[in-house]
Image 1 (cartoon, chains in turn red, blue):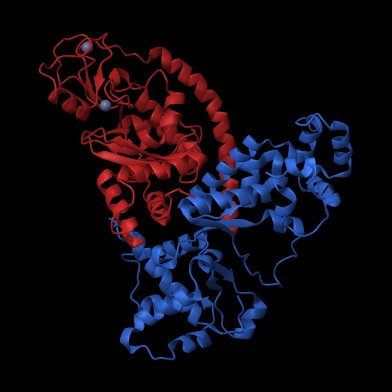
Image 2 (cartoon, chains in turn blue, purple; image 1 turned 90 degrees about the vertical axis):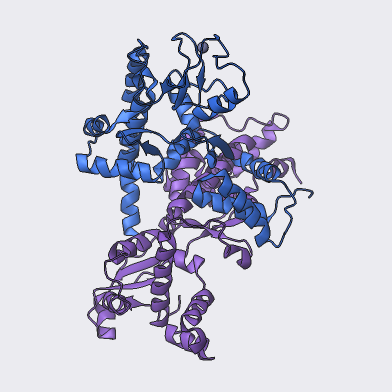
Length: 289
Length: 308
Ligand SMILES: [Zn+2]
Ligand SMILES: [Zn+2]
């Protein structure tokens, strides 16, 4: 076997399994330590090669170590993700069926928010909890929201709005794209999902940049104009919470989408009921254990 | 190699069959009693279609072989691959939450109609886990039940009650390496407490009563702050590190104590912690004060009459 795959890779993977989501700085530190632990002073592979070797193996089980940039500050981050769209089923192992149902509702509210705000206020989020088929109390919803933030699935802003974390975007990517194909938008520079960033001043123009992508792009440009329509680019035109798209007559684009989402939800509720039964049975088993 | 066995090579059903018991012929019947679903389905599906050259021969073979074999054979290589992947990811997800991966769960969530393929899928999943992660999927020891209290379990129930967990198979030196600087040391604190509890159980003849445990907690000044010990113990039980058992009347009179519950090592502890690691831990606690015969003492204190 000429494969360079060795215990250093396995050690790195075991660490990523427990960490799931980490900055690139941490990833590089883990990579160096993994070689050192195996008494290798000079890594036989560069960091990129190392990750590629791991991903070659992971691909055979539909998993991947994937890079992205944190939307809020552009920090390069890595996550161990499933690539075949059953991430939600992975969540099943972390939360109960009711909790997942609530989480899905929150995702829906965030992704389908009007005016590309991609966020939901605490009040709306809590109100949604009472609308669930198996409704949860306000205090239970409050602690659950806190848990979603602690577990790095959601971000809570200073103004009390919840939005998707980079972990959620990375790990739930397949689910998000499959479920909200028409609602999600991509950064026209890096093609990653964008829920926080900047948009072109022209309503019809599709240009959308992450803050960090915008910074990088304009650093190499002589003029600060939209690459597509050449209109002056304003960094104050934002995507994400509390933007001014509404006052600018932006479209509440979700209206028709909401209708389809609701029908979808109808099916979903049935599935959820099944899931709940399963989980309840499971929990009983565990208690018995 | 006959054409039939060659075709089965990827699947290797017979050689992987690890459940002792019924011969090939009776397996089909056993399958029938286990659950009626796979049987119904396999009746509806066309009988063996992949090979046309010797189909008549094949049919004869099928008639004489069991339904179980047919069920496995129907799975295409891609389907088998997919199921292996799913089991691998399921095992990883369970490990993350530290809950056992139960055979029943694998059958329900992954295998469905192919429940008899379990040993094949499991062994392939183990290969993947070992190659990629340096982990092995091992069966958890079954919990010792007080023979008096429990009804006899049938063989069938035993098989479906099997559960598995991941065990790190990297060299010991590497297992101790921590690539992550834990931000919150909570996790380490928890594992520290667990090691203490397991050691206490071990040197107390491998059983510790509720009262004894609380007594040690008081002596170690482990109140409810900052670690909520009651909650943590519940978590350890749920994760399989500890077994909690009500003391039955007979045992109670024998030990002449009136403690309602007692703790033992759980199945996960038996896999993740060895007796020697506990011994090392205790030696570490004693530090330079450790007497040379400490290991012997620990062995004696663990009480050989309580076989694990
Ligand atoms: Zn971008
Ligand atoms: Zn534009």
